[in-house]
Length: 372
Image 1 (cartoon, rainbow, N blue to C red):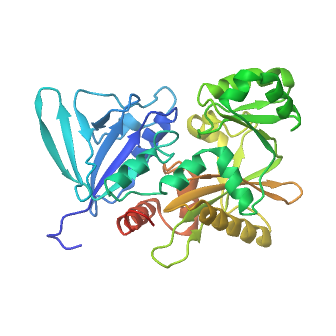
Image 2: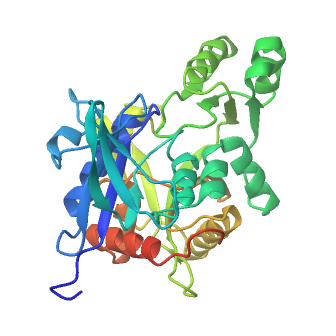
């Protein structure tokens, strides 16, 4: 980039309406601290829990997620509005009774949103309407990989191994909860009860006895009326990062990472992920037999392609005591703080956090707009 050439303008969008609002804020703090400011101009945009888009001060401390401080985007009077016409990439700030203020054009959006109304294809659809380049997967892959039910159907169609599960829709639970509980009992105990369209371990319960099931389902339903119940799989938690190749270059798989959680947590829950970092350790590269390592990497790449993902993804597996590999899920916008698993795995592979951010932005900037 020449000295006279303007830096590409990156809108970092975070917060959102989902229960993962605070996690998204923490992710944005990490990315904005590491993004190459000599190469990019950064425009922070927060989405308040009520859905209002607002300009956010470039103050990373207020976005940190730590014990005693849960970050949140506060809606103000001024609202940021995106264009919906192709070829117009300008942002506008509007306030009641005041003339609109032109905020200038943006070149790419980095949507650091987790969960529904952000990671599920909704913001991707909005950006597609405006022909604005953005980091990460498109509408379909984002929507399908957000829904653990349809995610598993895609994996099964690609002949990838998934564990036993039961889906409980809102109507099924309201009309015949006994039948739902009978289907879950057939999985055996323990089971994991999860909101079908949420992440960051929000609303998840480990259920060891039938009498605990009803409460766990109701807890999950607080976040999503559609619930998935998965049979427990005993083994090691292995993760693989995928980075899309530019143009005709092949997609890349990172070194494998293994999640090791202290005995103070029954499973890799929200507190272990974000509030008790000392209780979680990432072992990278994961110590597995070489053939199994290569097989897991290949399965991660196959899952990425089968789902139609773009840009990045973290693919999570279980490695059982018998040496079997079970595909758990894909995260199309994984946690992206410096201590998150996805950046750590790529650091172990030879790509620094800052360089990883640059690579993702450049992938988005040079990606074809519209149907792909």
